[in-house]
Image (cartoon, helix red, strand yellow):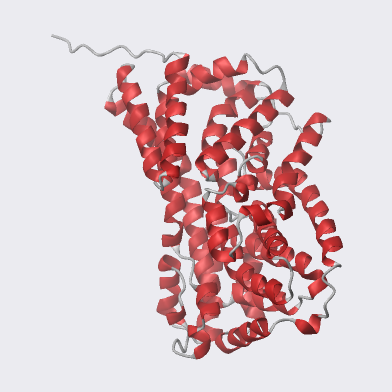
Length: 484
């Protein structure tokens, strides 16, 4: 007797929407109760799996959908974990400290805002981490601002803006790699197209910072004793020399030459370990430990000296390592589990077919993307969810309309990650409150590129500019044949 296999059914629109409503609702309620985002994503995946079982799918089918989707994310997970390696080893070698050291030496009060922006931007580009730039240079720069009587909200706005812009332009950033992964383009295509909106917004911000900064007219000799002390600590702990810049040079040159990201970062990290051992007299074993668990003050040649134990130093250098990136990796894992299930059981197809009927052209599609992405960011408080859900939901719509998916990738950044600092309950805002001591209510107005980038994109799209096309008809036909 043959076993009766349940017939797989297509979900109704409301059944499909219920999966997304459950996701949004659980995130909104759960985060308000202090529950982390990962279990909420897993809970949403459980709901989607139950919906799949109800529609006639077996657990083996659902498991296969999850595995398939996770397989697509592995390259980004490799990059994200390698970013942790880079951050830990660059502090070990002195690469991040030397950038910080000479950046601080260039500060003058009336140029503080521009300097703060450029220093954090440079560190974020080099390391691919907004938080790393804010937690290293940002902490020191806030001390400078306070000593110069510069309003902390303005100072934090410039610091955060520099870190966010640098992160968006860095091939090492997790979200800068996640966006092109979802949209099926290269990271350099993504950065190039994102720059069309981010760079004009940055230019406007620098003009504003320059004008406002003219009001902070104190002489550069008034740089605080705290900064002078910090510089002294850095000089005591690191033997600053040109070789400390080699890891950064390797990344920058390799990025220009468009070399593979992960091997490039690993080579840079190995060079960083060698530099740290030969120039700072650090232990070879600690260099490799910094790759996994991050750098910490006990790794200094003289860990008991006053400089190594100073709170300013411990705050600056205790970071990096693969372990520090696990939160992002786990979030992607949980998000892709949910995405794999709803794609498998046809939720995305049902929603897309209904959604696309109401979109009449490319401009309306991009504006709809902005709205959906922004809502998701303010609901979830993290960028990865917005990128994953919006990207997976709309990628095929862009293809069917003949729009290059790098348009989608740019919008995911402008309407997603650029808005993160403004979400009071979001991870970024909470991080900045803890590290910089300033909340969104004080700094939002001065994070000019973060909200101006989407304005620039709206203007460009409305004028029909920077909207590259691409014919996906052959690719879409192959997908139809494969499904048949």
